[in-house]
Length: 364
Image 1 (cartoon, one colour):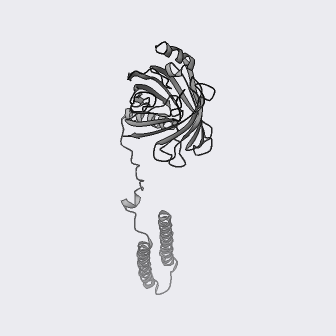
Image 2: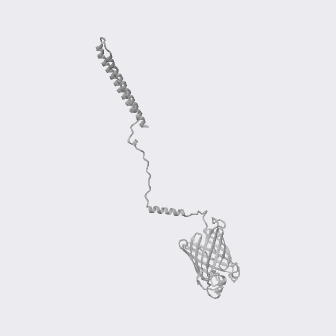
């Protein structure tokens, strides 16, 4: 817009100058023509001398007027024209250059991308609330695929209203420690079981047990174990836990409901094979009469339904007979479990027996 205004002003100045020059030329030519056409009379010579002087005076006056006009026009133009653009006005505005991130090691960048891809593959379920620290058990007397680990100590007790083939009540107790990491490598469970408090045998009689377990997933675990592999006071009598009992077992937990606090939300299935205590009653009694260790293999299993969050219903086959009961975790944040049950339902021994087990654990 500034350039267009400047051109218009200069164009007007040019027109005014041209008009002034033309006007000056026309006026200067008229006196010359007059001097050549006027003649005769007494005063011709005088008029001839005076007319050129008059013409020159007129011309000078017009020239002075033109000069004044040009000067005025120049002054007007100077006052109306904008100042000439400076070098700063002619500069093109520049945009700020984007800042580039510092160059990174390509290997480090690729490693970060790989980590992000791994995160996308993982699933992170969000629980509705903080879960319980205490859970009911998975079996009554059978071993299962899970076990103690990470420096966990435990204590279990078992009361029987009467023992097999007697009218005498008695109790048993076991204690031990869990070591290792079943998720990363293997968990190791070491324990000692006291078979009787004195009603059935010498107090303190019992044996050492070992169990190796591996957690393959949150809901799947396997284990191998050896119960009573070494004994104190080698007593050969009627007992639910014969010495030298080895086994292999697996436990799988199925989610029947989305959230664990819903009724009947979990179903656990345990199955295994073993000798010793898992053999049939007749086989055990025959070997005991022969004063030798029971031999052979038999199957055992348990099915556990989590009726409500702190209570599970258990049905199991011990290898000798059926048993059924409940596993109750009465305290939310204390790992204490109570297991009332009935054993020998289908005829093993001399009739059904009521048992009551308890267990508590503490992890350091």
